[in-house]
Every structure is written in C-alpha cells, then in structure tokens.
Length: 262
Image (cartoon, rainbow, N blue to C red; front, side, top):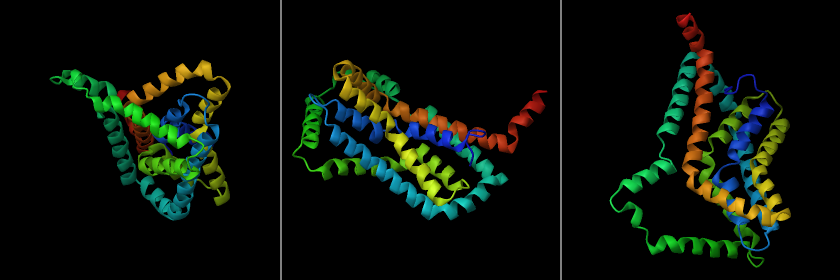
C-alpha cells in the first residue's frame, strides 16, 4: 500500500512518525509535565518518553512478526481491482470523517448556542486543574516510584494505539518493504525515536531556556487542549486523502478524467 508514491520509504516513515509525535501520549502529556513549576524533572521526562517509545517499538515488532505473512497476502488483495476500490472507499470515508468530525470550534459554537451553555460552568471544573496539578506533582516527585510514570506512559500508549492511524499505516508500509527483519526493526526504532523527537526538543528548550519558553509552552499546551479533536481530524484527513489519491491513481481515475476533460 503505497500512499506516498515516489517518496522514499525513510522519508515517508519520518513524516508519519512526526504526525504520531503530535498525539496526546507523545506530546500533550509530556508538555503537561514540562509545565510543572520550578525545576523541570528531566529524568522523569526522559523515563516517560523512553517508556512510550519502547512500548510502540514492542507493538511494532509484534506487528511485524505476527502480521508479515498476513500483510503479504493482504498486499495482493489490496493490489487487485476490488482491493483498490476498497482503499478508495476507505480513503474517502476517512476524508469525510475528518470533515464531519466535531472539533473544538464547532463544539464551542454548539455550547454557546445552547440555552445557558456559556454560564453553566460549575465549581467542579474549576477544581479539576488543581487536582491535575497535584497529581502531576506527586507523579514527578523524587519520592514517587519510577514504575508510576512508566505505567502512565504504557497506559497512554494502550489507550491511543488503535487510533494512531499514521503508526498503523507506517507499520504496514514497513511490513510490505523488501527489507530483512533486522533492518525493519532498525527502521521501526528510528520511527519511534522520531515520534518522541518533538517532546525531546521541548524538554531541551525548557532546560536551557526556561524563562524564555515557559509562556510559549503554556500557550502551546492550551492550544493543544483546545484543538485536540481538530488535530485528529487533520491527521485523519491527510491519511484519507493520501489513501484515496493512491487508489485513484492505481485505478486510472485521474487518467480517465483527463481523457474526458480533453
């Protein structure tokens, strides 16, 4: 399944990994940890990021070892005309889902239009940030067991792995590639490293230039919280468009349209 025709596999995997690097588990939670007042807990942050990277590495290895034969068989099916039509439909469905998905701006408009929607905020919502801050302090404290933050990383991975569409597409492309298994695992390790690269860059900035980046990091965290659904819609839309375009190209739809237009 070549959704990026003409693009070398390493570049395609890097682009997909960067998309995965914008997820809740790989960016939003680390950003929340970076906003802890005072000295940043760099060791705890690295432990979290290392754990979630290893989690996706293990899942990817299981994918490659368990599904490689299935992928070979599925590749033949998906390369057939019915398979291409199926991919065309799936890509279109992802694109439509991305367009129709409720995003933050749409939800805000709906709430604002509802009777009393803007004024029904209760005290429980005001207390939630305080509870989260206390939970973060306990989790990142030196007295907290390392297994606690590792558990958070694994839980985040388990919750969102099925929704990581770029990751699934990337693993499928890697399984289909004519590479020896050690090379596939090496590429997978690189993929997981790129996934956590945005968070690592933010950690580095927070350590070396805390006063300068603190306010921008808080604005970024607030923006990510507001636009989480919108970001998901963009990712689904991009993947859907690429799948749709690849299937349409293989089916010759663009050539047919050009002939009709000519």
